[in-house]
Length: 284
Image (cartoon, rainbow, N blue to C red; front, side, top):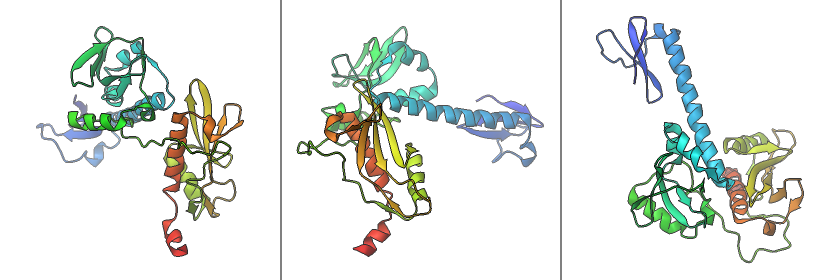
């Protein structure tokens, strides 16, 4: 933490907040009001806002690599690792080798030293793959065991991987079904409430649908849940979950892969969870 002069005081950034100390070096409880427009204070606040946006973007990028099954060149991981925001987003994630088998939990990275991992025996190992693969949790066969092992080791993942909600497609799924109705019928008093929920959860709203854009096996697919395209103050309810390919052609639920199925169901369940439960209880 470096201090810079602001009038008769000094200011600095500490844990993302501007802090201040007087000429005697005593730290104050808050920044004096008269310093609100001081260039040093304004600059530090702008820097704090940028750092917060950068941290969110790094986390979003890492989660997108995982959700879209995008292998990342080792050199990219190694070069961004010194950045605390990137390191925080990547640290402790499960990575797999070219064969799809779990290699370990990511703990370190460097161009000269490769990836530092804690393997499934609890030992520290180093590998240097051309591509780093961060698997979606639905693809991990031993997910429960990995969760328990991560807790035992005291690992903390900022990016949602091991403790992300997953849905497995049922074996008895109707092969002729065109949609999934599990989370349809969630009532909302006003469409704008459902639109806001979709946006807050990170989904786009387009043409009356909440949309989750995905890639699996090199194929672009969208999971969609109908939420309505009428007056935003009208009542609405969640519709069925459907899937389309990159050209907008409808796909049957049985035609999508496990990641797309899981992420589509995750979106549908999250939207449904915000429904008006009071109205449901009255109706019952």
